Image 1: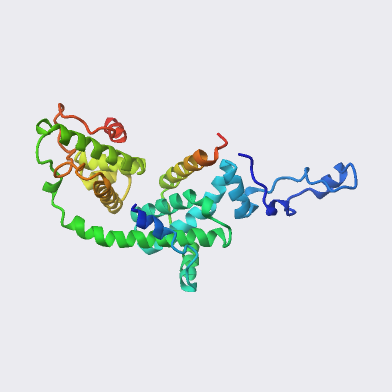
Image 2 (image 1 turned 45 degrees about the horizontal axis):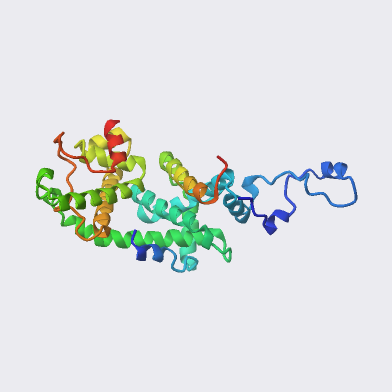
Length: 258
Length: 58
């Protein structure tokens, strides 16, 4: 897609070699073609957005660089926890980058992004309050299947497959390290301390990540078609080699092999 | 994220008061450390999203 030209592009820019322009002028008409491009760090948000919409990775990178630390700092000062802050920052930027089409430029990009960060943060705090209560009440037995896979009826098999596909989709939305931590804890049965040591992250960060994955699985169960959730939830902690692996959990399988 | 949560993100995204703005600007002055792996992973994921939507350099 060709890069759209904004009104700001027409402004005289710093760093233009005026003398060179004058020398190369063939006629009295003003020549802009020889103007050096404005460095990205000096471009306005509008110019960077235009570049991004034109598919320029350097414009995208500059915009990301400009806002990432500001949003992260803001979120962290509210949450005081890097794992939770990362989650909110991830949600914020995903929402921002999915919604650039709806940004009309009636306010500064900074206030628009900040508003989205603030709302995402409030959402997250609200969810944590309600879901924290649910998770507190959860007992480990609840994650065990009511019967072995061999005893499943065809309908239960189908429901399980749908459920694991939905879970797989959710896993795709997580970062690699979140998946790895989940695998270490629930498939390799490692302690929080050991995971913390191996991943070079704090125990607090590991716990928060596990909590988030657990929550994702809950959301998946809630959103999956009625009856598609396996009885009692799926247990991936068993090690029966003949047991059918959940379909579509490629990232989990990859992590297991590593 | 539920549909209502998604909508809530865009509830009056420009609506913040001076105190909130001050809080944001104060955070801006803090030197909060960030996990570089997280920063880079998120950058890659977002760029992938942008590239799919608008086409890209590479």
